[in-house]
Image 1 (cartoon, helix red, strand yellow):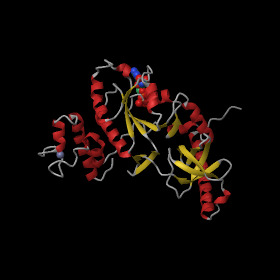
Image 2 (spheres, helix red, strand yellow):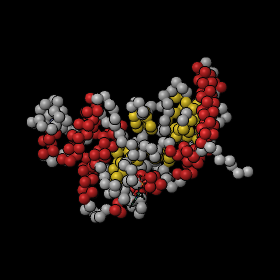
Image 3 (cartoon, helix red, strand yellow):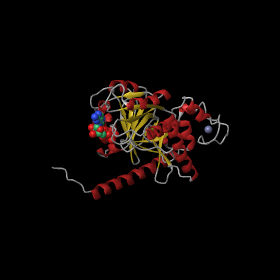
Image 4 (tube, helix red, strand yellow):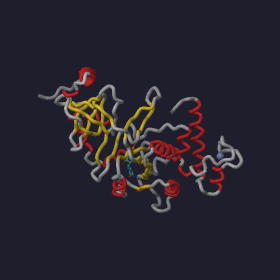
Length: 343
Ligand code: GDP
Ligand code: ZN
């Protein structure tokens, strides 16, 4: 018999009743655990949350098996990337009972402007740019400052090298040399010709990476190149959750064939980070030796005499354009800090 197509209303009703059943199950499990009846649950097992859908979390065990779980309500909500301990509660569902310490947190303000974790335990952020659309270095700087605030590594990825007019002396390469001087590796790739993809794969072996960058630079193309079998992983997740393939839009952790992991979330790829004035200051690594050495402790590094930062720029120790972007970002962030508006 042909499958009947459900209307949007019917799908929503089914999802609502599923959610209600799951909530009831969570309450029951919480009660059991509170009453010291945790023994009715299976033994504690370690795993990683590789994606979530509503309250349903998909946990991967060390052997690669996937398990559908809910979290104890007393726990901070687990997100993609979290290392967890879970126990089986029913034949098909587990319950997450503990969360391990998060090495790093990628957060974004939610509707009420509270910082909400999107993914954890990221090791490396790949800031993707391209000759077209015209790169915004102010945005690259903001990404890099956000990466510093997260305390993880950053890599600048220049995609679409096939569009460079001159592969050696293109003016864009000169602009990017500034980042290399500061200490950020710049990897050149083309998802169209395949150039540099092997080198990028090697650089990603060390941990879990995530792609960020403005729309149109080629992030989806790069995900396709890095994860040629992404569909298979997505299908396995859908089978585990029983929720259909719409889980693809959620943050998901994928294993790369060449080693390392990629955290991917189409919704997050082009998000623009919020920064405080302090985060902006510590986001410009090359300024660190000079900060705090100005004549005036409240120096705004604009018109004051004996400003250590301006002197460093004059002496050629700090790139003039990056410094000017620093001042702009700092002014914007300062204004937001004053208004207590964290966006
Ligand atoms: P996203 O918005 O960052 O995810 O970018 P997409 O992956 O959707 O790519 C935007 C456009 O750039 C598409 O038309 C791609 O075909 C194109 N594109 C991606 N990578 C390359 C590349 O290496 N070279 C060229 N010339 N075009 C590319
Ligand atoms: Zn100063």
